[in-house]
Length: 258
Length: 254
Image (tube, rainbow over all chains, first blue to last red; front, side, top):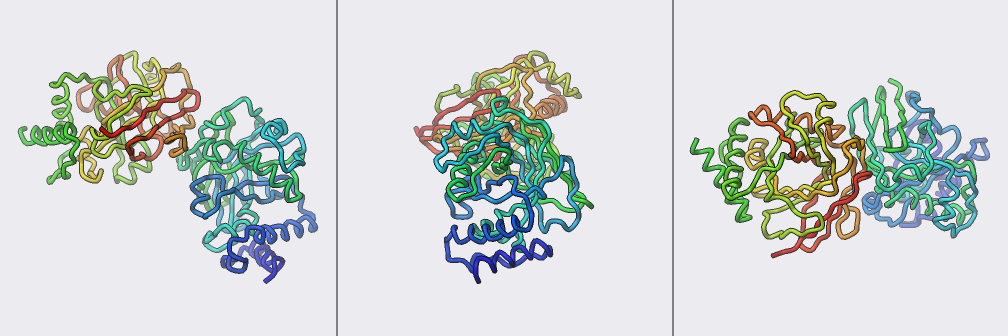
């Protein structure tokens, strides 16, 4: 199977809502580039089809999760305009296969970051503001039976995302120590802090900026970046409602239609 | 009751000699478990230790579910349990110590019985980041609800950080424990009953059930924000709490 074939089967799974078996064994073992080639094939397909690229997500930003998957770096996926949900929006039944929510810090950029060696201060200076976010991840692989190659090929298991509504400058809250709590149907179920994302969500952003410049899809002014989970992900389904609060940054909600 | 006194004496000896004992052969009632705890603390007071406050346990839904209970537990703190911020502890003096990141309240007025969150917070003189060193006197850290209550709810040591403005919003503070400089535990104060002040409200209610009250000058440890981390010799622990600062200690053997 070529990268294009694997990309097509993932795309079909997404369009039909029918998950597929893991695709990792169709790729050379440990070949992250081959998995990104699959992701890239779908990105190119979707851009040709008219989907608008508006940002990126960073995954595997927890050291514990990296160890679990046997990798020593995060991964990334593409965010398209049609993946955005408004604060409090309901996700239509059947739109996703097996959604889970993650509370994250989202960064919105006001400058391009074209260099593969962008420095920390250059990245800092490119951030317009931060927003709280719930990333609704999803997997086109049945029962979330994923390894690193599966998730990279599958657009880093991205689904949809919702952003809070009050922009906060990044010097107005403690990015490393900001507390995070996510409630499911009013019950607090996931807890964390900024440090859970590579020690500081900005570290993840720096990694992404360099990586995106190196692979030819550099971050640009206006891009939204979901920087990575601040605590454990939470599965949710029909009728469930998630609310995430990040200290100093505000809150954001999503729901699944009953 | 002599039997309860002998259980207390056995648990006290286990703490003093740092040697674990078997779980209690017969289950105690909750009343008797707290009676054993009171007798156990009397052993400490008789040695010259002084009560300085209380600690709350089972303050997360996950922990309550794990233990199959729907109520919190509490234990007494004494001055003998205080560890200086930046100080060190001798691991050999504990059975199998673990550390938990917590929020501590210092009271400026008494609290007892049913109090509102507003009343509870009005009695708070200051809040601090704190690390509780818990140590079960039971083998393998295994116990029933009443076993652990009898064992003073595993209280063992308290490291208090800087006292901060009581008006600080403590609802959702990020908490990071680093061991030898590496992040080991990451959480939020929201894991403590959704808000640590709820634990203070519960403390006032629960001590009153045993005919006691929280006093001005008391320290109340609100409960753990994350799972506990087992301690080994030669470690440096440091808890950083958003807005409240940091507290830490080292471990040594002997």
